[in-house]
Image (cartoon, rainbow, N blue to C red; front, side, top):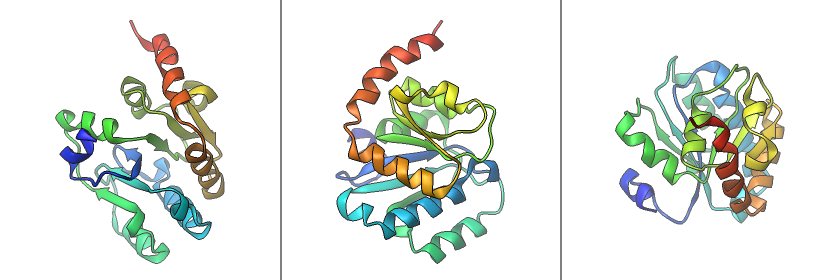
Length: 177
C-alpha cells in the first residue's frame, strides 16, 4: 500500500505489472488483446485488477495507444510511459501483485530476477528461457497469445496467490551467491 501511495495509485485494486522498455517482441499488444477478452468475459466485475504498464516506448507508441482506444480498455490501465529510474523500481515491484511478461520471443528477461528479488509471482509466456526460470510453483506459464494470457490471468486471480510467494522464497535461492 505504501508503494501504491508513493506512485499515486489508488489502493483497493490488485496490480499486474508490465515493466521495462516496450518493444514489439515483449508482446504488449497481446496483453492488450487479453485485457479486452477479460473485459468481455466479465473478469473486471469479479476482480478489482488494474494493469500497470511502466516503461519507455522503444518504438512508436501510437499503435499501442490506438489499440487501447479501439479495444476500449483504458479504464483497466495505468500507463507510465517513461524510463523508470533505479531509485523508483522498488515501488513498482512492491506495488505489484503479479508481474506479467507476455513475450512473443525471448532468451531471458531482466524483469524475472527483479520479480524474484521482490517476491512477486509471474505470468510468462512459453518462449525462450522464460519457462525454465519460472516453474509452476512461482507463477503461471501461458502460450504467447491473448486467449492463453487471459486464461492464466483469470486462474491467477481465482487462486490464493500466497503459495506463489512462499515458493519464490525457495526458488530464488538458486540464483543467489
